[in-house]
Structure formats: structure tokens, C-alpha cells
Length: 106
Image (cartoon, rainbow, N blue to C red; front, side, top):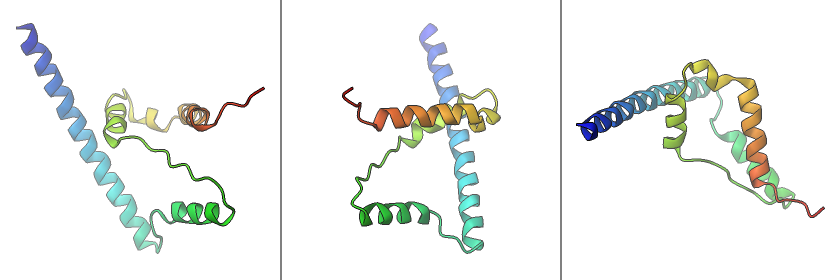
């Protein structure tokens, strides 16, 4: 009985995650569509950054995470506004930079 309850909770969580993923997908498609209608090319900022890095011989580091992990975190928010909390964004960026920046030797 306990296994069935655990499985039921797991299925419920997976369904919530699927709904969140579908919602984010629709939002992103809408944003990209609006950008295209405005004459912009989504992703062109990344292409320009890579081109500029190559021009100066900079090392290019591509950092990303699995979309499923991101969707799990979004689904776990108590309030969607948490996703846009500037302090959390700043802290996340700081941690990302620390994780990809080599430690200096004193």
C-alpha cells in the first residue's frame, strides 16, 4: 500500500512537471514568434558573442543544463514570481561563474 502511495505521488509530480513543461514551451514559442515579427532573430546574440570571441581568440565556454532539470525547478516553485526573483538570479549567476572560473593560485 505504501508503494502504491509513493507511485501515485510520483505520477502526480510527473503530470505537474509535464503541464509546466508544456506551459513554458508555449510561452517560449510565443516570445520567439513576437521577436521574429519584430524583425529580430532569436539566438542572434549568441551567434554574435561566439563570432566576437573567435575574433579576439577568446576561449568559448558553453554552459547549459538539461531542460528537464529546469522544468523540475520551475514546477517546484511555490509562486511563479520566484522564477524572476532578482536576488535568486544574481546568486545563481554568481554560482555559475564560480563553477566555471578556474581557481587562482594565491
